[in-house]
Amino acid sequence: MNKHFSVFLVLIMALALMARQSATAKRVLLISCDGFRWDYPLWYNTPALDAMAQHGASGELIPSFPSKTFPNHYTLATGLRPEHHGIIANSFINRKTGARFRLSDPKTKFDPHYYKGEPIWLTAQRQGLRAAVFYWPGSDVAINGHYPNLWHRYDEKPHMTFEQRVDGVMQQLTDKHGPELVMAYFEEPDASGHNYGPQARETRHAVEHVDSLLGSLRSRIAKAGLSDSVNIVVLSDHGMTWFKPSRQISVNQYLKPTWYKSVEGSLPTNIYAPERWQQDSIVKALSHVAHLRAWRKADMPQWLHYQADPNIGDVVVLCDEGWLFTDETCHDGGMHGYDPAYSDMHALFRACGPDIQQGVSLGAFNNTAVYAIVSHLLGIQPAKNDGNDDYQRVARTLFINK
Ligand code: AMP
Ligand code: ZN
Ligand code: ZN
Picture 1 (cartoon, rainbow, N blue to C red):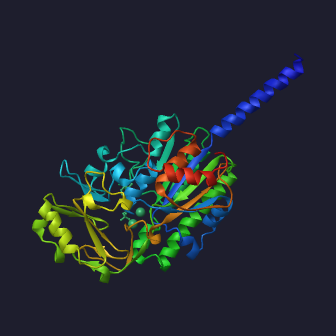
Picture 2 (picture 1 turned 90 degrees about the horizontal axis):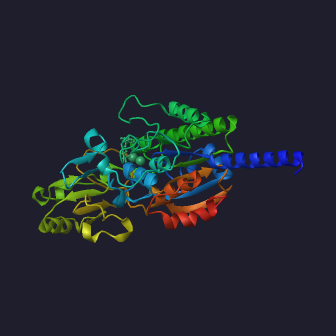
Picture 3 (picture 1 turned 180 degrees about the vertical axis):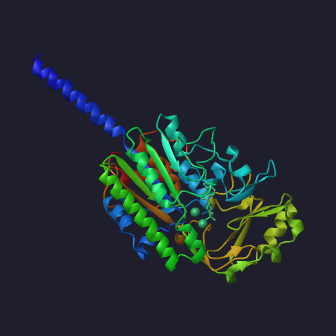
């Protein structure tokens, strides 16, 4: 073989290898903005999210029931519905031990037994990739005995500011030997949405602040020359609707204390009442109360997918949108946790990057699909999950390399 030709051949092979390596070395940045309604960009000024929709894909994520923070962030991370991943509410009772799972109780929040399935950071690490996670719910728990390669304790105060998280994300992305998966969580606009309602000056401000952070992240990624190697997904866990105390339904007014062992949460209310007569008394007492529905666990409607987990209450009470079944003091503002069929509960979805089609609209899809979407972008095999139907449907429109 001609000497020049063989050098040329070696060069071509080396280039091909480099190209393959760079194709497989793509990274994913996954960001959650808690309580970001899918339609905030229609109300407020969100140039960064609008640009992502233009340069990539936009959609409307249907949360899993209940449309609460921990259940849905863990669904986004695992692709499993709450009835299959075990985080069935922000607070519930463990029937085996009698313990009360609460986000504010480190004994239960950090107990890995509650967290079933495999979150995306562990799926990635099991397949040889690395993950850095800034505050995603569940990331500070030793699930299956493991943490992400980089993680932070949420109960260690003060929290990193949003700006520090953006800096941290950039540090990871610009590190040549850094992780392939970077995830970050922002508590806004959920906090403002609760305090002031979805349509309030303060909530507008929170939405626009988060948008400006996303804009700064994207321009820093571009400046670092990483736009062609990072796929970005921005989403949220649920939406937000209006609430006022005149829509509060008292528990004590309708239920006698002898009818239950424990009443947990308000959206939904899981009632632990082991005796059949107790369950029947509760369902009967609530059957004529307007703006709520009560089911024995066995009678839960199929569309809520809220039956399989043993820690779900013996009776589940769910209010109509904008109502609350509780005796706690409430104030005017915003609320979520309702039936995911309400469009006010739907959440944000944006994606852009080298493997994402430009300017496509995905419509509404279930948030169980996100785990497989991120797995595809990372080039890893997802574990068994509940999102396959929606994933198959969305993947056809979303990806460039299917
Ligand atoms: P909600 O909006 O009612 O679903 O409640 C969400 C709560 O979860 C907020 O108060 C957040 O501060 C809290 N939260 C978010 N992430 C974490 C975390 N990783 N660990 C504990 N609490 C969290
Ligand atoms: Zn939330
Ligand atoms: Zn919230």
